[in-house]
Amino acid sequence: MSLILASGSPRRRELIALITRDFIVRPSSVDESRITAPTPAQLARALATAKAEDVAAANSGCTVLGCDTVVECDGQVFGKPRDREDALRMLRALSGRTHKVHTGVCLCRDGRMTAAVETTLVHFASIPESELQAYADTDEPYDKAGAYAIQGRAALWCSGIEGCYYNIMGLPVHRTAQLLAAFGE
Image (cartoon, rainbow, N blue to C red; front, side, top):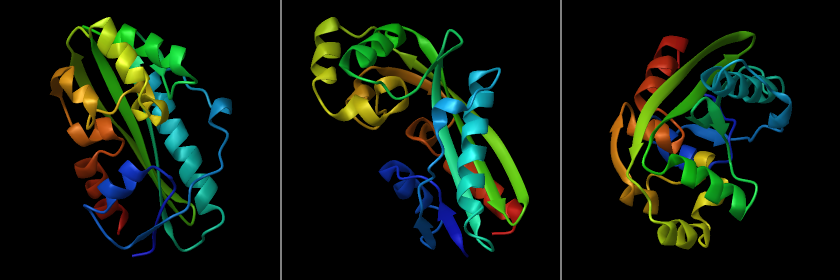
C-alpha cells in the first residue's frame, strides 16, 4: 500500500497504525482559515478534502488520507484554541452540555476521491471553574479541536458518548478502514 497521511497529528498516526503500519506522514500546507462551508460537518469534510487534494497533487500513484476534526456547540465551530482565554471560552461553553464532534475523512489518488464525515455526540458534566483553570495551565488543550483531549484529563468530564470514541480523538478508525477497503487499499 502506498498510503500517505496528510496530517502531522500524533494521535492520527497512532490511530491509522491500528489499520495499517504501511503509511508515511506528509502534512498538508493548506491554509485552513480560507476554507468555509455552510455547516460544521460540511466544514470538516471540506477541510479534509482540501488537505488530501493538496498532498495528492504532489504524490501521484499514492493514496492520500486527509482528515480534519471540528467541535460543534450550538452551531458554532470550535477549532484549536488561539490562546488560554480562547480555550477557557470553549470549555465553559461545553461544560454541562452535549456537543458534536465531526471528523471529515477524504481519500484521494490520481483524480479519484471519496469523502465522509463521522459525527459523535459527547456529553460533558459541569466542569468546576477551578478545574477549567488548572486544565488551561497544561499543554493539553492547545492543539485540539474544542480545547480538550478526550483521551486525557477531559475524560474526567465526559459523562457519555454516542458514536465512535476514536472520532473524538481525530480519526474514526472503523469508518476509515471501510473507506480504505472500498477505495481499493
